[in-house]
Image (tube, rainbow, N blue to C red; front, side):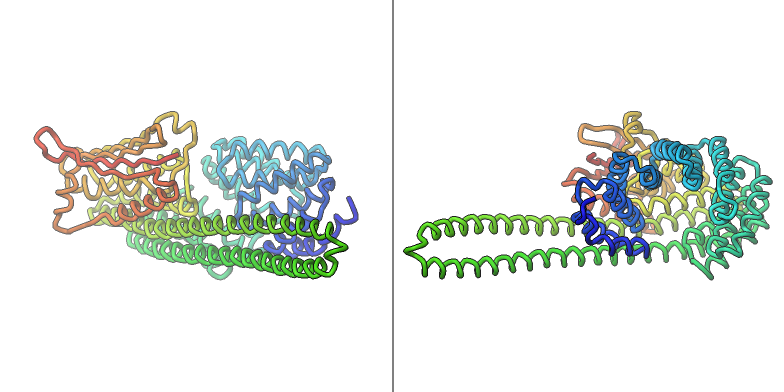
Length: 576
């Protein structure tokens, strides 16, 4: 390392130790400017800490880029410690992006390095990561094998890590049907957490209650879900723990025949979801405002520096002119050289100003994109509670009709559907395969409520292979509209078909039903309107604006040879 490579890095390392993410990032950028390009080891260390900080604040793209730099640089100097830490970060980022096969390959390579270097602590973390990816890839036997190897490799005094792995293993055993084995592993682990960390104790109780729930021991499950929520409210107040506690409590109550209690719990769950969506929207607004204010100040500083440069340039010009006037006869050649230099400086200054103006225009475009994204998230925050309210009305209707068995099945399916909605609400886009699974789950629930309801959800094989991404919850409101407004008032066989097909410009989704048609639905006495469809159309308008008009929604009325309404067809075009 060159002597100058150590300048300005002390404050950076202090920020890393104190966990100040923003300070770490800004200090890291200054360190990267000062470090020599030949100092691969220190550069790799700075990139690694910046990747961890970006990951902590949710900036996955920058975290991935810095982690890849750290891995490349550390590989060049054979620094296995930084290589393994960079691999762990990249594996976690791949896992968070649902790229489980890629994450598994990265975890296995890191495990090989950790075992070769004798680093048992990192080897245990890689073993746990391998097990987690096998779990998500639906390979429970492999996941169980690696969870047990991870437990065997963890130090006996690392109680917190052991409890986490034991909880994952217990949940896996329960899903495989070995409820007794899962309880035997999880019960002592939860008791350990009670003394170590009440926040983790609440999550441990939640997992134990889930195992009792799957084992059919619903009364014990309800007691533990209740205790988990009591501890959670006293400590972390984690929203995901609260939603799981309430959702599974309602399922267990319904399974015990306590339908009024289950309904009351579902009302609490809906209230929590409303609060969560409102809080999330406010947090996103504050984050965007803070980011915009920071970037605005940076541009103002850049303009101020440019003005200072211009002022100094003018002062230089004036001084040069006085010198040239005093020594006109003697320094004629020098004067010509000075004039040429001034000409060059004016050209450079003009180019600098053009560059700053271009950056300002780019900033304005980025602010507009952020505003569009914010409007999309606010609309989605309105859409999700509306969708959940309609689903809950279906469950209430089944209970009122005395169809308790169908109501129990509906509540269980609705709980799974709510978890899917919660997962989708934090993502701007999801894969086509995930959207298809969500549509099938929703239509299966509606088929319980409506007799003679038949549905299909299909897609071209080419689209599934390409892992196409589309906005979350874009298609479901049209399927919901077809059922509630087109098919609910129809007697006889009811059909709704959803088809995803490839087009020359992107993707086409067609939602077709054999309902009563738009005109008859609009003339119904109760005057219902599809609020969710209006919200979805607004979302697509914003999306098409961001995609430069590459998208549209067209609604067609289907008619027979006599002109009578035979249903409705919705065609959604998306550019890819």
